[in-house]
Length: 151
Picture 1: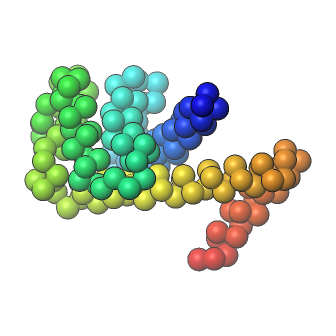
Picture 2: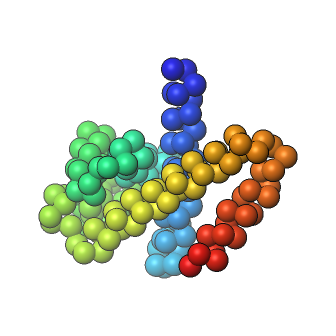
């Protein structure tokens, strides 16, 4: 049981890290400020946006968004026109059906990144367990190379 909990924590940490990097890259490509990952508020926002998608692979984007909104409201955030960490306002703290098309697409993007990240993690872990540490570098390269060739 202890190993299962530790493994779930490891998966959560890896997937959060991957999502944080992807989200920051997305923000940069959209001419938005990148996230300050040393800022606890930034980490909390990203955590609440992603944790339900990490914890439940089958959750709908709508349900994941509802859980995010509930968590943010419980921490004192409110709906606002802009994301403002000082005022604790976010433009996406509303019902899923009231979100803009772009906001819905961003939730779907997060779900897709996390799903792909989970699959990559599980495949890498399986290869590592089968081949041991000596083959880890080759496994990562081979897996990545195969992904590129499959496209």
